[in-house]
Image (cartoon, rainbow, N blue to C red):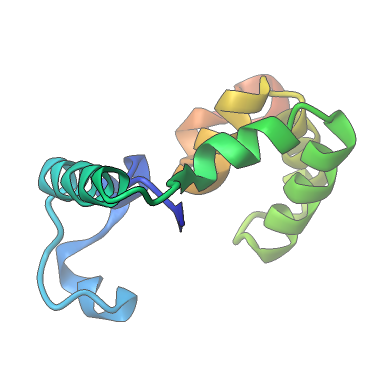
Length: 123
């Protein structure tokens, strides 16, 4: 079974818009992680092969060309000023694979982008 372990993306949810993301109530990141771990432990105890998306994606993203393609796709969908879109995408693609995957799945705040890439203190 392919699963996605809850990560830093849950801390970015706004209590006011949780229903936009198909949640009935506010999600508590630590509790979600613990429940996910318990769920996957039950699956494994019953002989189910559990694969985490994050691990598989990190393996695939060892290839720079894959990271460049995924970064370009992510930037095309992002609300980022066009003047810095390519620069940020290039910077993202050159992150180490594990960090790239964490960023791709967890999101990127404007303050995470180095000033040398964005050209400003914030986007």
